[in-house]
Image: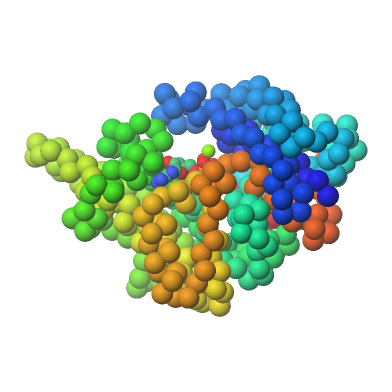
Length: 344
Ligand code: ATP
Ligand code: MG
Ligand code: FE
């Protein structure tokens, strides 16, 4: 079956066509340039941009795949989590298409999509894998019993997401928004052992209650204090060392908890998704530790790690393959969609 995937949870309008495990076309329009000067996403601007980009993005996807809209067998759309206005544009458009084409509609979980997209690149996801989704809005560890029917959240961040922490530290260092990629670049020129920043929720008393949870806001505060201290003393900021020490703390915690989850859950496969998986130190450290633990790491190419339609079409394809029934036209959006809800 041919699945049309629609993603509009944040600032990207992503539309893709998937047949089985094959990606036929995938087109993304982003409104990030319009948000950058405000230093963060402005929800109203994002919603309006989705409305403007939807039809051109759909047309471009159909043209690229060389298929007619009438050939689509099912429609999958992000129902949550995300921004209410952004989600509403995509879900409304998807309902209109499903109604006009008389095809089934699946409202799906965006975060599970970040993992499902890996099937298009690295093949079927085996039962009992561990997923790590790290992005601007989320940092979650998932146990994937079955990508279409059974996902359990092992843990998540209690405060900031990894990408969010990078963007906040980027602001402290006077870097352009989003700061994540800039910090990553600077960190490569720094000494990651020069400054040791704290690791959140690691060890001792956190072992049981927060074994798979993350916390990055204390780390961000520690970086802020460090910067303030040097500024008061009139000392020049060792920007590259700060970037390297901060990146090390985040990558250390994410990779050690992800590998520990694989070990305790008895799985040899770790799948990583979300825009933050572009981070070079995370990739390095997690690959190194996985190798030692005998765990295979699957990370899709970076363009499938940020928001796109392919991830939603991939999850839609998995649902259809598993024989999961559609959501129906009555679905609404769920800005805080829980991780065990794969299909709305
Ligand atoms: P969500 O999926 O939770 O809704 P999102 O879609 O906004 O969030 P993504 O687009 O997946 O998030 O990821 C963007 C985030 O990743 C930003 O916070 C950005 O700074 C961060 N990021 C991207 N590349 C890097 C990098 N190389 N190093 C660190 N952070 C990065
Ligand atoms: Mg984004
Ligand atoms: Fe995302």
